[in-house]
Image 1: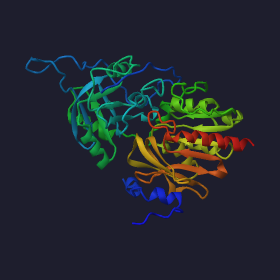
Image 2 (image 1 turned 120 degrees about the vertical axis):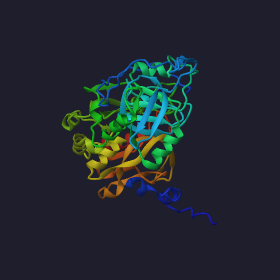
Image 3 (image 1 turned 135 degrees about the vertical axis):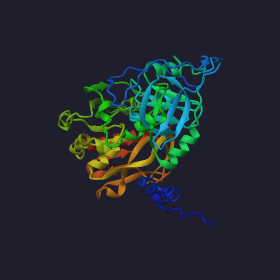
Amino acid sequence: MAAPPATAPAASRCLSGAKSCWAAERSSSSFAVSAPSTGLRQSRSRVLSVRAKVATGVQRASTVDDGAKRPWKLSDARLVLEDGSVWRAKSFGASGTQVGEVVFNTSLTGYQEILTDPSYAGQFVLMTNPHIDDEESNQCFLGGLIIRNLSICTSNWRCKETLEEYLTKRNIMGIYDVDTRAITRRLREDGSLIGVLSTDQSQTDNELLEMAKKWKIVGVDLISGVTCDAPYEWLDKTDSEWEFKRDQSSETFHVVAYDFGIKHNILRRLTSYGCKITVVPANWPASEVLNLKPNGVLFSNGPGDPAAVPYAVKTVQDIIGKVPVFGICMGHQLIGQALGGKTFKMKFGHHGGNHPVCDLRSGRVDISAQNHNYAVDPESLPEGAEVTHVNLNDNSCAGLQYAKMKLVSLQYHPESSPGPHDSDTAFGEFIELMKSNRL
């Protein structure tokens, strides 16, 4: 078969290899924990609290009903999904009963970044890699961790404590020795499911199932539980040992970053690109931000449903067109709604560090880190708003540009922590947008 002509447009080259399943999507341990970083976000998560106590250690003997001691840990936890399935497992970390939305993450590394990513508030994260480390905020936000194997030894040179110790201190439940592959297949076929994690043997499976069926995450404002309490200045750059961009900018730009659940490495990357950053809470008035006369505004990542935070949409509407803006993940979705577009809940979302994304302007394909359950409907966007990136797994909208409004946005994480650094150039694009507006 003859090769395609060299003059084929970038969009054609990208889309020709992509799966056309966007419509279907719409219709429906080796672990080392490094020293915690200092953070400013206060704990106000809306996730149901855990009745915490130290779970049985993975190396301790267990006693069964016959009184005999076993040198291994027995199953003492359950994951009950809203479809009625019950998964027996072994617990680590905190114990009790917790409700959340179960999602799977395909990353091969980065447990600690995932544990501390505010975008996972209200969710149980199932890691598809059986054996899997820096913090993205000052606390854990996910509801629980589900893994196949839990290593009893650690090998990372930065290790300070085991995963079980880490979760116990932070009141987070975890389960292991469960068939994560089977659960992942169920989530892919049926979509994300509400589940209950429990070590409480006094509750029946049916009681836990009722809890799962009654709990809702759609339409819930999760941002208010993860945002900062007051404005603050961010100063830290990417550490020199991890910095891969050598041509640092000589210009300085003042950027105001809205904290919808912002990750520390987004702030570090912007600072490394020459930005002075002021972080403000999610409900901070747009007028107060504009009074600071920033060179640009960042709308950050965050958890949950963008339609559940109309105050944030109104803030975006009041700012776009006045200064250059950059939206990431939740920020991207809020920009879509602020422009008059619509967002929808995906079947099982995108969670992982290996999602191929095509820049339709150049034909360049990046491997990206993603974490979201909602997407922008490109057909609902007004004239002038251009889709710049698509996810090559399902053709969903992965990036926007609106030249008249001086905005760019991405539905994935250009800072990629964890993940590949292919998309770090997106920060440079934001810098160029602020430069051109300064002229």
